[in-house]
Image (cartoon, rainbow, N blue to C red):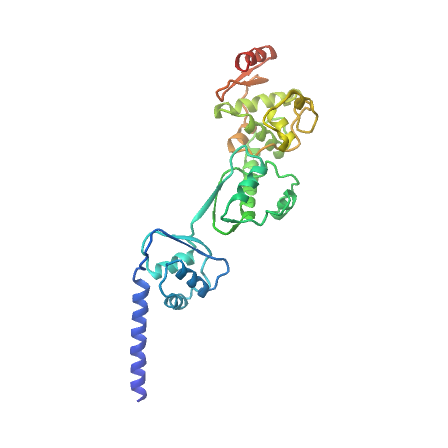
Length: 326
């Protein structure tokens, strides 16, 4: 009797094992492709299986739960947004969600944006968790471990990829660390006669160059003009810094009274660099700031086609202004 029971138990195990093996390798029948689904952060195995069932990935959820448990993968499921492009098997599905093969979303931070524009872009992303939305700029810097008190210029403009449900703090931290690395690399290879004393001053100069550059091939020349002015103590007289100082009140029209109104960012009233960057400079602007063109120009004016005309003296510059702007 006992022998017969053992035989039946063994046969049942073989049949069950064969059935589960068949289930694990047979492709799922997905009605719609591609099919997207989300697994929420902190979901248990049963909750994740239920989410897969509700999304139309699974028929019954219990065989999948059993398969995951037998594989010892119950604690390895990764949250995120996934996309199925073909009828994969349950075993392949387990491998996908335990590897974390999630869809990556993206947010683009544009060279020359202000930090305020960066915050608006990240706040607008529906795929990020907005842990910084109620933080001040200073609190945000503290949250990512940045020692600075002013955020402008500290974040590298780039396209950042992330999984759905990622905290926006991760994007800020990554962008900050990237800027620090690129700035340090530039500082270590800078031209020896630059009139700047710290990497932060390079960042300020690069942010001004970024805002003044229309055509990429003019960038190093524009940096050269500002470096020349700094060396002789001449005011930078750059409109973008004045506009930055005006702030949200700027209506798109820079007036003479704006140039006469003194504030720390009015480079028509004060010599030297602005107290902080005025934008988020890209790699090319940083490179131009540490390797400016060696030219004798002290002036430049926009030609109207995105390029600039460079002059070494005021008379030539005034003629260029009359030619290109009046």
